[in-house]
Length: 234
Ligand SMILES: *Cc1c(COP(=O)(O)O)cnc(C)c1O
Image (cartoon, rainbow, N blue to C red; front, side, top):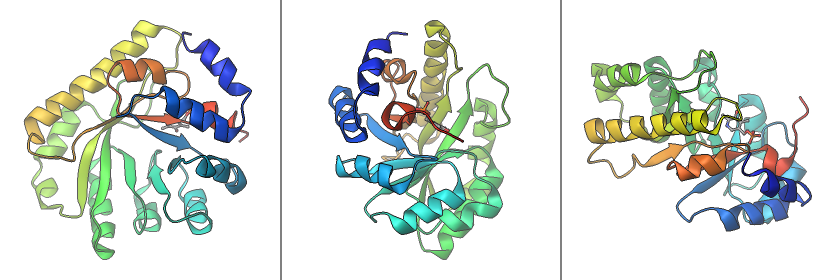
């Protein structure tokens, strides 16, 4: 892949150095979410001490423990599938829920946010990859969510944009097309539903192996784990 040499170089550095190296090559408007799932607090602090403030987690229990233990100026993003019965554990502090894929989930987030008198920022997750998965909406599903009477009553959630994952493949054209598809979805929703929203501005796409393509295709937010923290042991 085109970023092979860069990734080889980055592999040899410490976590703090990797953060600095990544930030130095990112366009200014692209946010870096350091995906710290499975990683211990000491390692997360190495990234924090290098200036990183946005971290992504995909397990509610781990996230709640890390939130308690780590500095309070960290912005935590929930990047995985969020079960409705667990929303209450992240509602007090979460900065962005990245993977909202149903009206039902959004309704619960709205309800829990209300209890804390918060407005919780959310991204709508889309399924653009070839791989079968239960998660992520189609454009049609998103439209019906956004046009529902119920959505119009939600005062404690705000949609900041879209999120998606490309197929895990070396076929650059395939990956590029999927990122382009997500960007198109963003634009259609922006024009149709969010033309007056200042907040609807994020396209979260790109991971360790494909973030350079994602940036070329208009990503505003990349979610990088392995290239910062190394391989995960589950
Ligand atoms: C784990 C994960 C990432 C990071 O993946 P890497 O390949 O380690 O960079 C990004 N997005 C989501 C949704 C993830 O679950």
